[in-house]
Length: 424
Image (tube, rainbow, N blue to C red; front, side):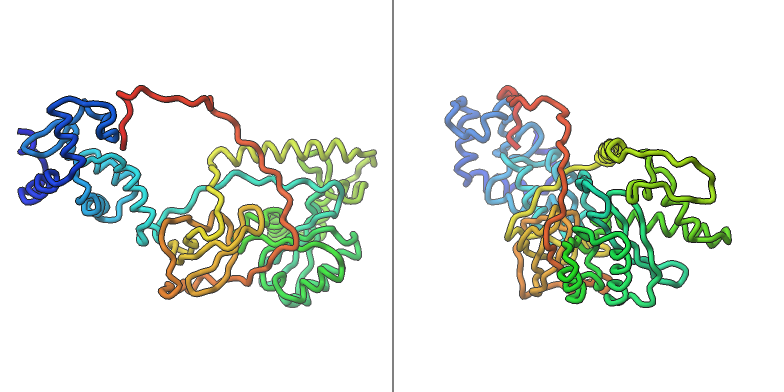
């Protein structure tokens, strides 16, 4: 007998027999097995009708027990013992139990499991958002602070030319940052927009007043997501490497910066040529030549597209969030806090309200969408390492152009024959 080999206790089998006899849908299925099927009866079981049979008053689909409706919740909890993931729970179910829609029920159960959502894996990278190149030098600049050899520095880098300006700071206060930025602007002009992170130097009222007085738009990136301020972050890496090499080699750091500013980029022109339309004189003898920024910028656009294609190979788009969606915020080692989405403030950047009423801003990759209910009266403690940065609302969303995903297969609607459909 088939039921004699089932890995279940006698008490469990007796309960399944009892609940099966009381389940009106399974009673109809039993009648259909005995008397023949008609398409309008029990449509959820019709696609798998050839695999159904009765054994000792237990309904089976091949070697899987068909579970009555009243026992679904209990069986889902048994499948989820040890808080296994979605695929492992589905594989366990395929070996033992079945009911129509069991796969969907497993997915919904795990999406609502607080422990599983708290310890969810990191989300995958999303495809690169390529910022539109400015049409002229020094229209758009990025800025960031960095620490090296016991000293603090300010970096401002031009999006058009990749030309970096740096200054050593006496302190990391907003006032010190603003003084040096005024010096850069006096030398190159006031940019139309300045991109920064949400550091305290940039999120304060003093910097907002500086932006109003000088007439530039201040665009901020999502906290705890340096990639959103990628131009400045890349500039910091380059400058730090130059200064480290200069110190180790006991050479002049100013000459190192000059050499970088005068060295051609992949597009064929140096940062200085793109910014100032002239070659900088260095210790290397050279002949002055004419230049054509249009050719260089076309090359730069092609290189950006090539970088995006390489970056996007291991990425996938995350579902955009809507107002009032329930999410979990990524912490140092888990998704510890629940929150509710309030609004989208930039490409892939959202303002959310935590259970204790605090408002924070995060990138989409740091927000895990769940089906849990939020409860503001049972807020979990915030990990000590994760401090919320004050939300600085950007004066204008950062201009980006989303590249179209390549079509990898036909989008023609396909429908397999009924006999091949598993309604699970």
